[in-house]
Length: 364
Ligand SMILES: *Cc1c(COP(=O)(O)O)cnc(C)c1O
Image 1 (cartoon, rainbow, N blue to C red):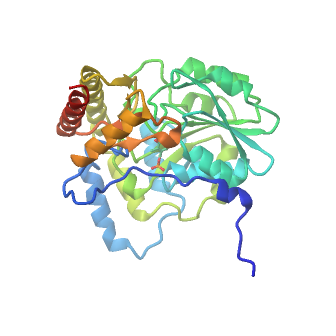
Image 2: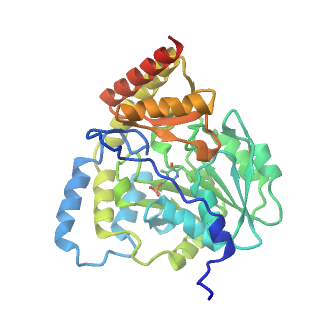
């Protein structure tokens, strides 16, 4: 008897482990494990979702015309160069499947976002992970890893789970050092949270050539992770490729409507960014005061460094016992760290107090 068998590389993929959301026996959990945004979805997006319940029998507009127009207006971009996806993960998969494949290589940094490796292996590419400096992608190491087989270089900027960021000059240096036929994908899932002046999400490099793509998501600052909606801004030839291979109805009508309403909610991004900046600093300061090292973060989360896997595991267990779920990042090669999303003021206070207590109990 022989059973159906996938291509061998499929079984080398480690499935993505998302942030947990439930704890047995605990009713009210504080979920700080998936970077979902502190405020939920904008009320207008929730309303648009409810309104769409009348239309569930209709196929969505496969071209997401209204949403692309809204994005174009918001970011001053040509809507013809935007492609929407069922989350930006969808677009990352399509890019890997289209540009990667057996015999090719995909370059990413050591602690880079894990979907690149999953999607790349799915495509049949070999994944080359490059060393980082201070948990930050190292442009020189990435350039050194490029070979004639390289097809895509992925940079999450800022990166999840480390929170580190490359300034525009470094991203430009990376692009300039890459062969023109290598696609550079700048994943700007956390762009809205960045306050640093030397940051640029990727629009300028997309505009400057034919070989850079920027991806964005509604899952973080717009609180629409459950709707699955993201987008790419890309050169015309890449747009053409994505439109050939993506699912023809990859973004549901509810997701399109909710995304437009979210995008057009006045002040939402500014409010979210201001809250994040304030409470990310508070969270980091509280952890440092408790004796826990934190890494600088430009995202809506903080990477807490306990020094050893044992201490990180014990802290995680302690938090879980109090109904607080954070993200273990051993799968990212960071078993001594935990990633903590910046939640509401109350959530930041609760997780901070719990960790202060944990550290105090540990050290008497
Ligand atoms: C959350 C996240 C994404 C996007 O996820 P989608 O929900 O699929 O849009 C992409 N890249 C990074 C680095 C992320 O953290």
